[in-house]
Image 1 (tube, protein in one colour):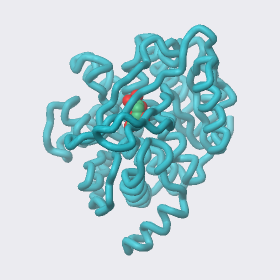
Image 2 (tube, helix red, strand yellow):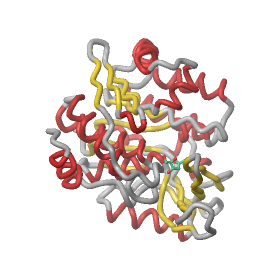
Image 3 (cartoon, helix red, strand yellow):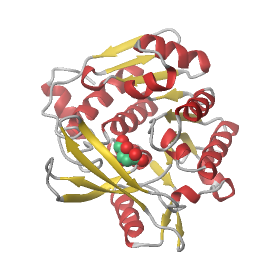
Image 4 (spheres, protein in one colour):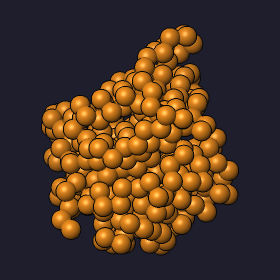
Length: 312
Ligand code: KDG
C-alpha cells in the first residue's frame, strides 16, 4: 500500500479557554489537545496530515471539524457521539507559569475503543503519532492507541510518541509502566525534560536519552524549555540552543516542536534540520496566547531562522 498521508495523529482534542491576563476573569476561546496541536503544526509546515478521534455531536465538535478543514487536515474518519461531549480545559497564568483545569471526564474521545479505528486509513500513513495524554484519559483509549501502534507496525509504518505526562490524569507508577511499554514500540520519542525526569527518575538529559534508546526507540528528541533541545540516536547527539524570545504562554510549544520535527524529518530524513526547525517553531509558539493560534507556518519559521542567522 503506498502512503497517502505523511502523518496521522490520534488523541483527544479539547476546546481551550485561555486566561487573557493573570488574575483576570476573562478567557479567550481557542483549540487545544496535544495530538491535534501536533497535527496542525505539521500541516502548517506543509506535511499531508490526518487526524482521528471521537467528538461530541455538539457545537465544539463542529468547531473542531471546521478548524481541521481550514488547516487542510484529513478528518474524514473522525467519529461523532450524540451521548458524550467534546472535552474542554481552562488555562490560568501566574508567576509560576500556566496551569490547566480539565473538564474531560466521560468525553467523546475518552470513550474511543479499538474496534472503532479506521484501520486501512491509519495504515496508509507513513507515520502514526500519539501521546501519553491519549493513553491516560481512559483504559479504552489506552487500548485503542496500543491497537493503532500494532496496525502501524504491521504495515511497516513509523510510530512517534510524546509521553506528555499529566500527573492529574494518572498515577505515576501506571504512567511509567505504560510509557516504557510504548517507548519500546516507538521509533521516535519526543518528551519534554520535566516529563522525562518524572517518568524516568533521571536528571541528566543524556542519561534520559540513553534510557529510552535502550528500550528500543531509534530517535529521542528531548525538549529542554528555554535551553533548546537534545536529539539523540544510538550514534549521534545533536544539541540545539534555545532562542531568546518574548515568551507569554508556553501552552502547545512542545506539541509544536513535535509536529514540526516530524514534518521536517519525514521530508528530509535529517534529524539536525528537523531539530533546528522544531526548536525555532517551539520558541515562536510561546510568543502568543493559546495552543493553536501561535503555531507558526513554514514561511514564519524560515524568516525567524534567517534573522537568527541559522540555516535550515
Ligand atoms: O500541550 C498543550 C496541551 O496540554 C493542551 O493543548 C491540552 O492536550 C492537552 C491536554 O490534554 O492536557
